[in-house]
Amino acid sequence: MALPALRIPDLTATPCEGHPHVRIAATAKLPSRFGEFTIVAFESNDSKEHVAIIRGDVKNAGNVPVRLPSECLTGDVMGSLRCDCRDQLEAALKYISSQDKGIVLYLRQEGRGIGLVNKIHAYALQDSGLDTVEANHALGFRDDERDYAVAAEMLKALGVKSIHLLSNNPKKVSGLRAHGIDIRRRIPHLVPPNPHNRHYLETKARKSGHLISVSTFSLAAVED
Image (cartoon, rainbow, N blue to C red; front, side, top):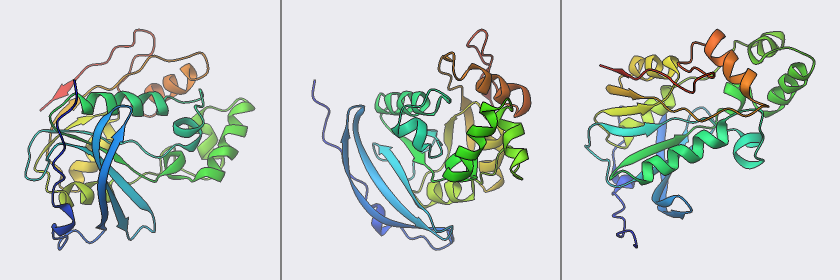
């Protein structure tokens, strides 16, 4: 059955005063293999261009499902099995497309914020036996260099009142809340591991505090 035509919100007219980090630069329809969306491009003062993939009308809406993936060229584009990034992105788009409204904020924070070249250096260190956290530390980085200020400002610019966050990462919850985002619920977002990324996921749980259990593919929802 054909999906109803999307009503593209008048986002370009949304005032961004009070949201100094971002500016809505362009808006268009985005038909995809996962459903019909609106894509909104943002310019920001972090010198990167970020996008929001939107289902329905989210302006002034509450309890909007939101997923916050960071760019992963090797996973999202090349289909790398070293991580679960592509699987999580596709699962998020499928989930959002099944809702009357929702957002995927795609942030240009490659390699947990260390950049593409450094991520490949980290891969080489992992090939020699280090885990993802140890590899980042060996390169002089924290295990996760991402910041969620821009994501928070994007949500504010879109006029979203409150969200349900699809995430296994408590740092995303605290990071968004620190910048004024009202998170009413965390929705677990787990995809099955493969032989190449199982250790990567176990390291996320053991060292980075992600709320996942790779052995059982289970995790506990947190609502507040």
